[in-house]
Image 1 (cartoon, one colour):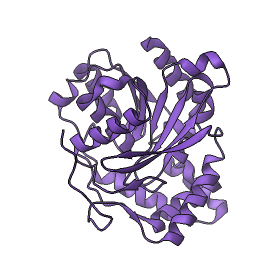
Image 2 (image 1 turned 90 degrees about the vertical axis):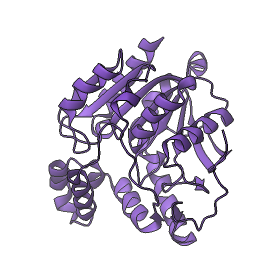
Image 3 (image 1 turned 120 degrees about the horizontal axis):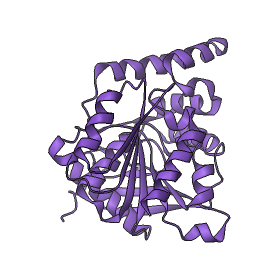
Image 4 (image 1 turned 120 degrees about the vertical axis):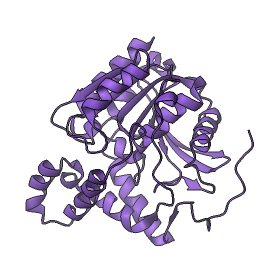
Length: 305
């Protein structure tokens, strides 16, 4: 397959930091969030046709677990791999874990060509996994990372042992209610400290009550310009091609998708797919129900083999 056309940082559809100073400020905030999770064993910069992809590696202390099929984590839009801090301790105790900073979002990856077209997104991820030497992985994606994951299962499934989708994009068109929630959540980060727990419960937004996460999110909005359109959902005919074992987890009060509709629809389209709705959560079940989601994800991965 041909590589994308040569791109520069001036392209309208390539994400960028607004300045070196804001980049440094944001990455300092990212490091503080990373520190809430498992300590990384190492970091790597992987070269692809679309730019440099930064990857964090975590691993189990048990030597026997180090040879198990690894987990690869894809974060949501407008953020970086630090948001997996509630999940890296449990996941990396059982399996090797790779957390990717997606090019086009704030983080340590450097984008040089757009990846918003579905085939380019699949090519970028396949190249990244190949350069890491990963022939078989359990792919986990949330929100926009969920779109990347299900798109991979449709277009480039050969390296995938399983796919876990956590309140993902890619299943239906993003509606106005989701964008209203995003903007309301952002404005709520400026609320007085005493009000934030109440707003966090009302908006189902854990960002508001984790100081390090709140600082990172606010810095990211100022520091980085995302230059990609919202991805289109996969069609029913595209979803029906997926044969990779798939686990779909939806928040009962999700504003990104209609949970009941998708928990019935996805297993109908994808043979053998498992789909569940988690009560008392919205768009971030892996954050506000971390222990439960970690347990369920690992159980699913174990069941694949």
